[in-house]
Every structure is written in C-alpha cells, then in structure tokens.
Image 1 (cartoon, one colour):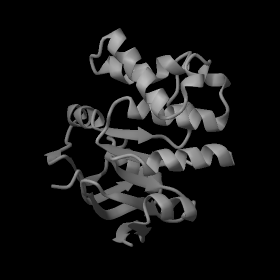
Image 2 (cartoon, one colour):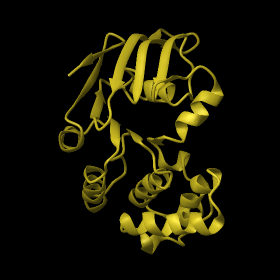
Image 3 (cartoon, helix red, strand yellow):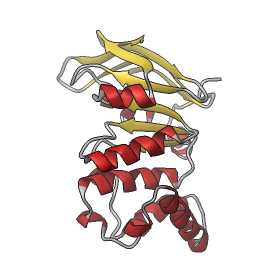
Image 4 (tube, one colour):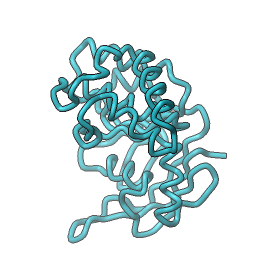
Length: 216
C-alpha cells in the first residue's frame, strides 16, 4: 500500500492559468523520491496539496490507504507526515529552540516531562544540544533549518516532505543536513534544485512536465 497516493490532481490559483492538470504520483514505504521541474511549475503547490494546505479543484489525495476528503482527515495524516517548509521562519514561532521542538509532542498529548525528554533526545541525535536554550529568531539561517528538521523529527513521522531543505545552508550545515537525512529510516519526498543533494538523498522521482508528473 502506498504511503501517499495522488490521483489526477487539478489545481489553479484564481485568475491564473492552471498549475496542475492531472498530476498523479505514489510514494511507497521506504522510498525516497525527488520532485523536480522549473521554477513556477507547481512543485511547492503540490506539496501543499498533499498536506491539505491547498485544496485541488479535482482529484484525490490518499494517505496510508485513507482518502483525505476533509480537514479532519488531513489533521490525522499530518501526525504521520512531517513537512519541512522552504522558509524556516514559517515554521519556527516559539521563543526558544526547546519550546519549538516540544510544541509538536505537546500537541500530540505528551506530558511536559515526556516532551522535554523528546527535545533532548532529538537535539542530541542531530548534534544540536548547544542550541537548546537559544532564542530561535537569533539563530543563523542554517541553524534555523536544522532546528526546523528537529521540530518535525520530534513528531516521529513516517514520511518526510522536504521543500528546498538546503536553502540558506553554509557548507558545514549542508554537510550535516545531508548526513542526518541519509541516516534516517523515513520515506522522503524531496523538492530541491540542488542536483548533488538529490543524487545523494533521492536520485529517482518525478518531473513536472506540462502540468503533469512523469516518473524519472
């Protein structure tokens, strides 16, 4: 059974030409796939449709064998799919790193003690313990990117969706992110303009061509 299954997705922004016309794709357990195409082709739009942040004009999104028809369906799916936004500032909103990483587990019903234990475990795993009590908005772009990944991994997702994860990374943090992601067990759907990064993490996938998806 596919973890994610998109069938015949159509979408367009009001007053503009259609972005997607019949896009279909599947992500199987353990797969790591890249989604490629030129700027403006609809890659980020498709990711937002998968997460229920945009509603297609027609087509079907199925996650873990269950059709996602209403917000409640997507709410359940988002517990199992971690989405790393293209802009880290869209995802980090708490005063400190520890609070940002704890936010997801607390929302899943973990106690404060359990959430803080998850914070320490995830930050240690990513070698970010030194950032634990830092003020989030004062971090560098690369540090924010890694903390954003930590906030997602704290939810223990089964799937990771990554939208341009190497944005704003210096060479050291780029290498660290690559090392972290290649060592994870989760299925991954990646959008990245970086061919070297795609080759290391998800060399196969789909290309957006003519508002549809073709397997590469």
